Length: 254
Image 1 (tube, one colour):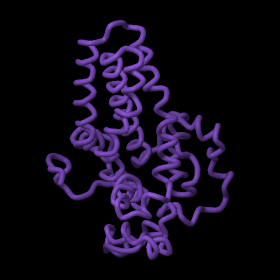
Image 2 (cartoon, helix red, strand yellow):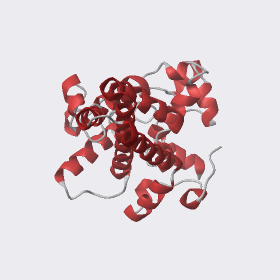
Image 3 (tube, one colour):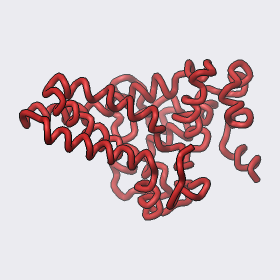
């Protein structure tokens, strides 16, 4: 159980009911964000101590930053939206926490953030080997630091997309609209967060009017009631059958 303090002493916080100021306060008090920042700073210190040359470390940081959208796309599309994790009682709880809960309740801030026990090892595995190949321990630390700080940026951008406000900047507005379409219209496309290049390259990008029919699994991402009968572990952990629409959950809670 994660200790709660500050903003997180309360039970739940919904981005569609929060101000930007409240979001910033919540963001920096959340344990996972603090974890990324602390590890990022520690890795930066190690990089400063052991890096042997500037250029390979700049390349390591650049690779970590620029491959992040591809790594996110692949994980989001094939792991988080894959159906094999919920079919095993060994991985059902992980899948529920890292993505199912977010689609069931898209504005719940706590389940919007990634789970630290899954994100931290993934960042290390993706970034450290590249950095090590370029400049040993120093390069690995540089790449890890870049991965941690990039994750902080992505998490905040993700929060902003769910926050109840309309961006004045056209690029940010389009970004938000595409991500909201992923959550509220059709979850089988627009897997990017801040970058939809890979969606376009792999054919999963869409604009809202290109898919007139709403996906019946947009809120349960494929774990519907029929699947819950066959593979009941997520349903048991959730305290009941998955919701096909968030309004069902609000009615039950009333």
